[in-house]
Image (tube, rainbow, N blue to C red; front, side):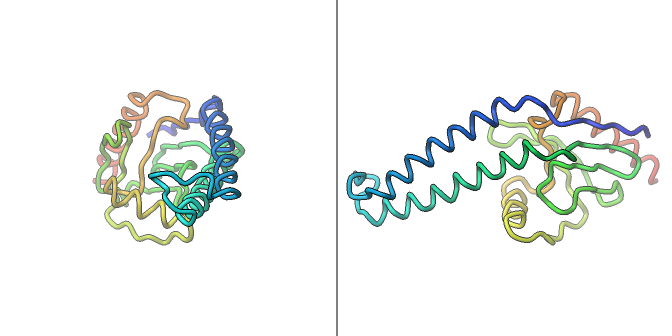
Length: 177
């Protein structure tokens, strides 16, 4: 099996646009927080609900901005498929290398109108801490596995990614058996 390395997509336009949008929303939320009585209406009927909405929104916007900036400046981000397994530098998890022996199946799933490659492991212990643990649990509940690969960050099409991973997984099954 030959080693396949797929680099990250260098087009940062969408990420920068989302960061700018989040900064704009963040400014609005800070304004809500400073003057809560001016922003009460039927969806946020009291000052307390405006304050709670603003605080949750500020935390969420800050988290999104942090994750996007982190993804732009990470240098070691790539997807490598080789005889060991799949190394995904895009994972937020500590476990970046998934060995072929650990994989029970790989399949294409569609979730929220997006295509993903789902990697189902024989055992999926959650050894993550902090925000990574939260994302691990969310992906496991919503998609059936925490280990998903999206092509949006990669410098290839989804069809090419799907073909490479499924072919490599089939080759690994032949080697292991």
